[in-house]
Image 1 (tube, rainbow, N blue to C red):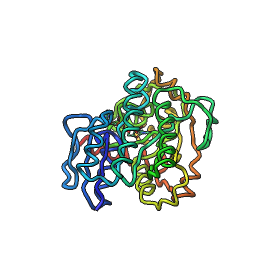
Image 2 (tube, rainbow, N blue to C red):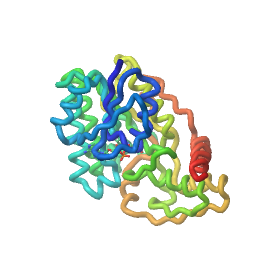
Image 3 (cartoon, rainbow, N blue to C red):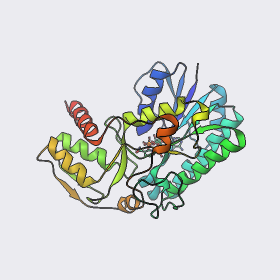
Length: 315
Ligand SMILES: NC(=O)c1ccc[n+]([C@@H]2O[C@H](COP(=O)([O-])OP(=O)(O)OC[C@H]3O[C@@H](n4cnc5c(N)ncnc54)[C@H](O)[C@@H]3O)[C@@H](O)[C@H]2O)c1
């Protein structure tokens, strides 16, 4: 029996991860978030609690009271929202993360998953196949907090032996829960509008290429990382993972194959600067070598599956 705690569980990743975890683990799942009301669908293995990760005492109490063995720490303020409120992003992303790491040590939690992001790279990084170890300094508050968090993962592993595991997710594509706070969110919105027969106004330039991953592959990668033997995990900062790269213009062209009348206008806003600081592909070789990362969906399969599911939601 493994008791699992998820923070930030009502977000884009948490809402989907819960289904994968409840299908693969025997035990209880404590889904938490700062929001009062749960938006999760009923599941007998899952109970919902309010938890603000900035509050150390609350974090320690829940780990102790629920006898938690594994933590999936997803509570975060993402890139676009982080630039609108950098102070909050600092507090949630850094104070929240050190609270989780510290409480996991004091409450004897065995294993922790904390996602990182391609936002840890800065504008000086090689844009193609960016290496896992890099010296580029991120320029967003999101990137600064996630880059520092990666150092903390390694520190807590080296100093306390805490089994912290992490993936640098690229933009995640999903038709189930709409993303609302990131820079790569345009892709989900553009696919949804094409499926609905609408036009779309894009907040990034036509040629801005970024790395992406379809949510089922992101979930499989997360489970594969977390169930791999401890000795397989060679990287204690964060592993790069991605499926494919594309620009808004390339996505528009592909969507026209599904809906020939689809049109996109381009009106870049503050998120363009964030996207310009990120690489358009990242080196995934360590994930492939260490725990057999193997994404199954290419861009065409992803778009086709998302269009089909968005159309079902319209009926
Ligand atoms: N979605 C992506 O494309 C993407 C890409 C790269 C990395 N990630 C990482 O994956 C993780 C999950 O991202 P997501 O897309 O689900 O984000 P999200 O914004 O959809 O969800 C984050 C959740 O955290 C909650 N939250 C905010 N402040 C909190 C606090 N103080 N205490 C507890 N909960 C709080 C929010 O209510 C929200 O439900 C994050 O670490 C993020 O950096 C996501």
